[in-house]
Length: 515
Image (cartoon, rainbow, N blue to C red; front, side, top):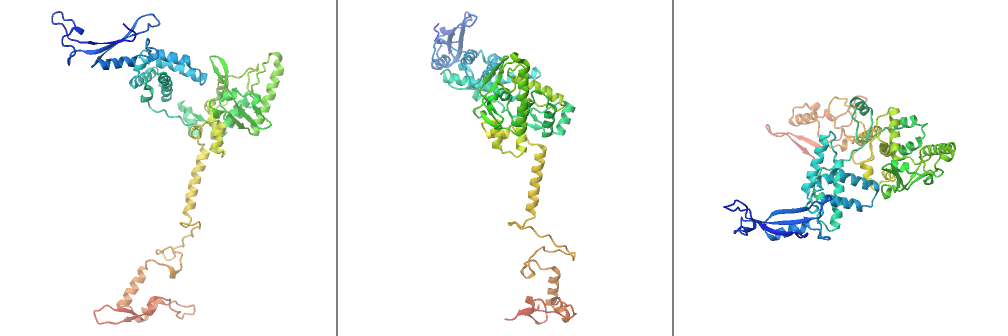
């Protein structure tokens, strides 16, 4: 059989005498309901030397079977057909970047998830349904083991598969990326929370801690005071106040530190792979940055440098001059994992709620914002490529800052309520109601007020017009008594120009104004 494969028709009708299938001998073959088209493709021998062959059927026409066969063949090498597992191995062997830690993550995903679930499927046959079934199997396996898988882990596994399939598309092996079409729950990035007194009490009672938590300023100060005499105090002081990554702190060299200028230049980071330390570039291009130092950090680094020189003098020829700021006792560079282990031990001894070493970086951003630093300044300090990442991930609100913001908002609303609308003039206080009646609250002159007349005035005017008010009291409401008891000048009203006219009995009196 040719390695390029072949197609043929086959009918499932049986011989009435022998009972065997007629196959290609069916006299009705080619008619509707009699037979379908199949393909056969020979694969290269496996690692164990056994023969491998693909047979598929059910195609309605010869053309459909040939199209399926062409899709299974590799365009560059017609004599071979790749499975997904074979392509993943080839893809990993050809990877040279971007970083060794990324390649290690790719290899772990291929070994633990991708090859067991998709390795035997032909590369050209991988579909979104296969990828979704793989995620379901991974989730069930982790649940059975008592350690549920997170959405972030599944997202990273899909990113690895998507990168491998994109490379296959560029090589001309497939035309579509099944990993991109597979549905997967969106991972939610955990937001850092502050270790308030309530959260500390809950953690002590239940043992449950937040995924990402940061210390308050008082807790950070307590930790730094507790480790002040430790030989790595300057490292944790620098991370807590300036937000360095642990790899950046481990890879910091004295040639990148300017104590007189109070500046540190981040040019590389130290990583650990398979027990060996590797110096590599920072995480992103924006991670190469200059960081300003405060006077306390400069003092801590000066004291650390003096202690390091004393260790060098004590060991003599046994000391390895590596040029790194934070080293082991013999002068070798400090591994990032050792910085993390030492930090966990020191924080437990200080009696503080648990945080990771990387959480000190979160705390540095939070403390900087609480101190009034601009978000752009915090982004440059942390070395983020996007200010959105700084705002969404590495900043949490301290309780004191949140309460102050709440008080400021309330004060703003109260102050706005004390102003005359549309102006910046403060409102005048409401006068007391001496007569117990309802007041209009207007501050305008009485002659300028336009308001509803009082009920008492309406009653007097109605009685006066109807003629039921005695003559001596008819205009009494218009007079004001003077200090000597004599009537004063009547108040100017429109009633002074009116003349009450008597009409016939039964006709309502009229008021005539002088012309």
